[in-house]
Image (cartoon, rainbow, N blue to C red; front, top):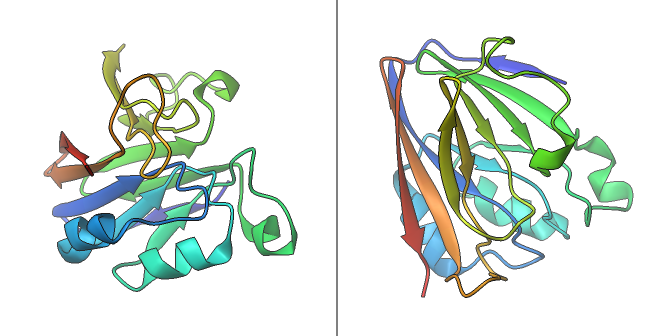
Length: 161
């Protein structure tokens, strides 16, 4: 696990997952003004990360479909501290191996289900942006924008249809 800390008071974060090799052009347009992109895994090819890095710095985790030499540098979890909040990132929420509230996290970002979700439990916000390219369960392709301002998190989902 690595930790990145920034002393920024507020920022806009693009949240994406389960691109499976394709980053829709609409996602790039939505992310044009973000300060950071978080990819919650199942990237499939390095070119997907390169497309996102053309917009903003990227923090990404390894999903169950990410294999090969290009993915060796990806951790299964990441920690980002930004705008006064601590965020834990992993691909599959079922593999969460810590108590986020007890560990001091304000948010947990995951993917894997291909279904957008926003749940608050024990003071921790659980965010799944859905799949940007391959949605399931009658959902549209989606991403999220997370506005962090002085320790507060506001999440908006964007359908990409």
